[in-house]
Length: 98
Image (cartoon, rainbow, N blue to C red; front, side):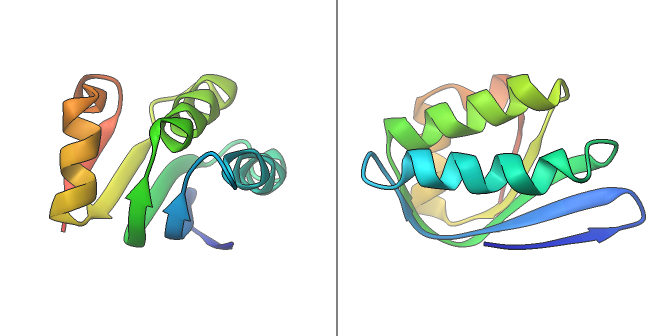
């Protein structure tokens, strides 16, 4: 998983699918990245994210809770954005399409 920190904003780039098969591994990867840069604002760039299941949505909620800050998820494809909206995530975190 790729990440970059610029001017106090930590951007983590999501790619492929996040589902029950890999959600725990992805959550652990995100924890390791965030742990080293806890003072940064947290943004997920989902330009290359193709699919997210309820297990993946749970990862996003857990990351937000553990970071103790509102996260942003940007560059969502229309299909993935619809999943976030159907789950009501636009009320829990900043969610933006491409």
